[in-house]
Length: 127
Image 1 (cartoon, rainbow, N blue to C red):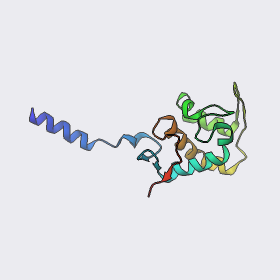
Image 2: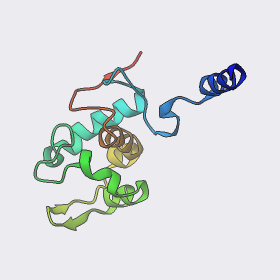
Image 3: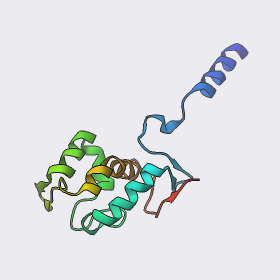
Image 4: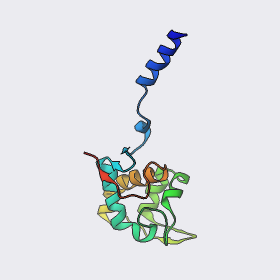
């Protein structure tokens, strides 16, 4: 019994952190890695006017709720080429070099919101 408990305990210690398979790192509910923070900054600059300050939805849909319904590749395609849907028209961002260069980071930020790891808070860059 003690040996089994010891083996289980060692296995838990050797397990990777919970965020190991996630594209983001969020600590204390608001401190984020530099790429996720950059995604937040880009989102606030280019996307928030339609999708809300914290991706909660406005004229465009809530990405905090809907991002897990689409895959990463579909997200990237919509950002690049735009989409017409029930909320209206999302413009194509293919000609915007800032958005295109940072769309992986935007995805990281939105994925943290969609997974519920990052709430409706202004994230801070973890030091």
